Length: 230
Image (cartoon, rainbow, N blue to C red; front, side, top):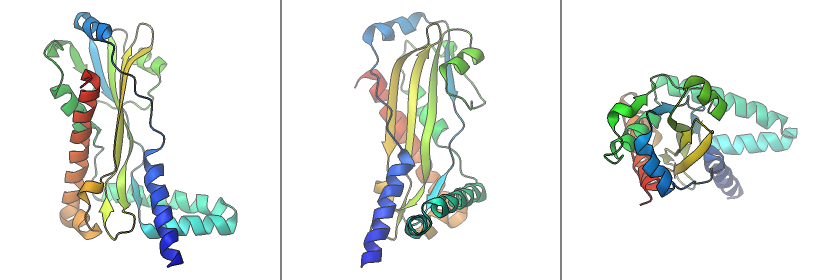
């Protein structure tokens, strides 16, 4: 019974750490929204995703137990091994970052005054989301960017099932002064679409890919609602 409690605690910690700290929301000012009509270029970019999170209840318990026995060093080494395994898992099932789905859903929900001829999408993801780096890549206009904060397949607390958490941040940055005009954030824990590990990985991970895509789409809808102040 005690081990079960410990395992549940570690899984809860994994779920929290998978999404990290939520960035602050910055609502879009109505005047700034109106000024967007006169912007010559709206650059749309995404960033390279962080490592895929893949962990089981046993992983959480083992990391905590090893860390306690070794003063944290062993737990850190075990954590690196888990990251390596997660990377192999993502490659084995050809998993793709949900951010393109979130981005496309967001763009589809933009109001009509966002003339598509002024929207320029970058095909290659960037590695650095610093404002100065954006200025180096784009010389004028504003940048609408999308950054996956976390994504993965994690054992659900108090259950033998798994879920697919996903978190994504979006911003609108004016290059002229580097000001963040708007910032949105979506965090989905995937608890509403739980399944067994075998169900997620059957048919080359078909269900897992489907659920990751659905969380990306759901976040795209949530972000556009935040952007439009709905």
